[in-house]
Amino acid sequence: KEPVRGDKGKYLGIQRFRFYIKCSVCSRPITFLTDPENADYEMENGGTRTYEVHKDKKKTEENFETEKAEEEGADAMKALENRVLASQREVADLDNLDEIKAMNLMHLRMMAGKSGNGGRG
Image (cartoon, rainbow, N blue to C red; front, side, top):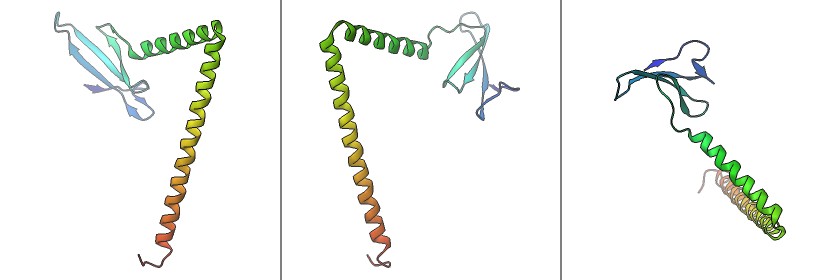
């Protein structure tokens, strides 16, 4: 393990590191770098990456959005159902937000009441 030097050595003040390992089959050296930007690592030399989570996630999200758009385009009732569900989620989110605001206001009033009684309590 060693810190990377030069202009590629830091990302937003976070030090990048280079790791050296050996292949368990052929004993060839493999080096890779930490990638704080993506919370991942990148192969430098001596190896190949077999699976990349962030690419798989993007592909899955794109497929889901495409299927949803095709489904809504083909079926007007499905599009209406999705809009109704989205509206219901939005109303529920607003209700939850109002509840949180009310709790915060009550907490502020309680704190103001405790500090405003001259130390008696």
